Image (cartoon, rainbow over all chains, first blue to last red; front, side, top):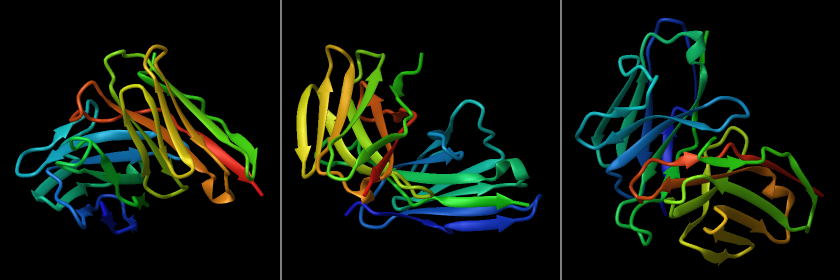
Length: 119
Length: 112
């Protein structure tokens, strides 16, 4: 149980275009999802917290107009990188928080990640 | 000072040895702790979660929390080459619903 999927797993796009990444909780409902960015050999950097039915909360320094997050249902959150530039190339990972679990719902389960390359 | 710190490694051990991983945290209000395993180019996988002090065991994995010294540990018994990965400790801090604060990760290499 507690499986999170991401699509696509790998995407190459041209500079100036937009890319959408989907994050789905497959076997549980997640009122809260998180989006992270990870550079090679570095730890995860939280970009934003996404709550179903409300606006995402962005971390300091993350441009909300560039990284659009939508959490339209309890099993789906999307991250859209708008007007992508080469410096946006990175590994993007989502996580979903299990609600009502045995440890009072704080476990986060991560997706497999999406590698974005902007040329 | 970072809130959660880990030695980056790499930590190299022979197959079958015990892997010992550690994290320190600075905020005494932290109560919940997790260990994740991350293979290269993959998302982190939750291994263990603990609350309060003491030990928790799950198969070959044992998580230990020492709140008096603000120190958390993960032990992997009978290590296998497939355990080679980066191990991340994390905490949502004092409240279960908080966002996670991650350590920098420790890279582990188990040599056959």
